[in-house]
Image (cartoon, rainbow, N blue to C red; front, side, top):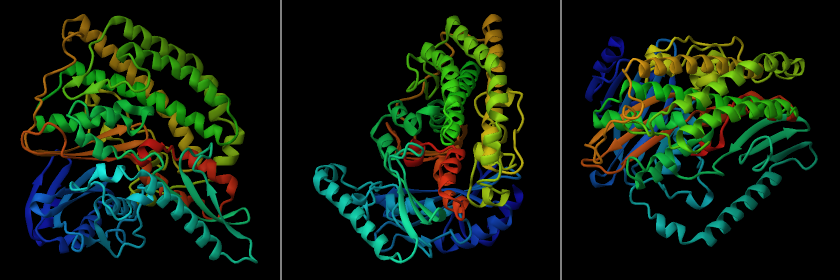
Length: 547
């Protein structure tokens, strides 16, 4: 960390300071220094730009740019800031895409939502938003949502007309005597969900893929600013219902940091217990979806059967099987009753009784090995350059896991180790998910044992220790939090104003965004039949992709 601190000696800064054990936080005085600082950070080993997060301050006529850099090898991180003018003709800053390939879509998102122009960006087009939002910067504080939503009919016409023009241009740019064409894969393709892949192909061979995302865009980062700190949970958990628990944990950690409160040890263990249950629920869907895309549906049905037992536990705890709203700032929402742990034990027993069948029939499946064993290879360099994370990164041999790298909740007391594969193929990503299922079950058993012991010896009061009070108004502040979500790292960047009743800004960085960006790189030169398999192996969730 000292090397990163010294790196800033060559630049003019407003401040450079430690932030958490593995983070340095710094703000540049001059936006023109951004690219030079970013290059120096990359040379120091911080080769991943995780995301870009603008914050709009119209009263101060500035846009504050936030960049989050990560070194996956040494677990060092840097939060870098600088200000730029917010007026449309001056809201411009150098693109970091020439240095960090993963900056591509993050900068396009900042361009679409905040109107930030990135000089030298190779392909600065709108992303996520539909055509009626082009050029309007909907996340700026002075955007008029009511006026926009009042003109729905014209917006629909804009979207339809734009699509028709795109189709005409695609046809005009193709050789009428050749075999090349552009296929629209989706947006309702059963293998990909509400996403459109514009597939440029020559016969069966894929020439390139341009993903068109945003079909389930709900402007979650704007919606949370319309809620109080508790009410924002309903938007945060909609990042993806397959693992809504861990996204709520991440948000609550940021709120708790600004509020300067500590949750109880009992609540910390409950967050582990609930979080791993949600991870299992998500992984089972991911494994089933992978086989579905090969046209083999049995695993999905088997997994749905086992998954129901884990959902029974979530229902016994929260009253809901999917949208649980079970985590809130200050701890976990409800106390714990003994019968709830009985439901959890049924789920653990069911998993233990079926896992060997799943391993022998599906993990060792010769068709899966033949189809996926050489497809979709992600190297360590690609993982770092594109800021990939979670099971996708670990399947490529990268030892990264926020539960170990930056422990939260009670994970510092959990016995666990990195699980990785070697070659980064689609098959490795499938195997990774199955192995992580076993790991999560083991962690749940540890958490269950610790909670039961704490209750038995009087250390934990399961009806009172679940929550500590959080003030309704928060001070002016800023925090980031990171959790190991089912699909990978989720980073929350929370900004509050003085005596705040709701978030001023919440950036939700989720993994499917960067992972979807890899489709073009992984599928060029492959065949059309390889698309669903590679797509399925990247473990993409539409909710977290579009937010």
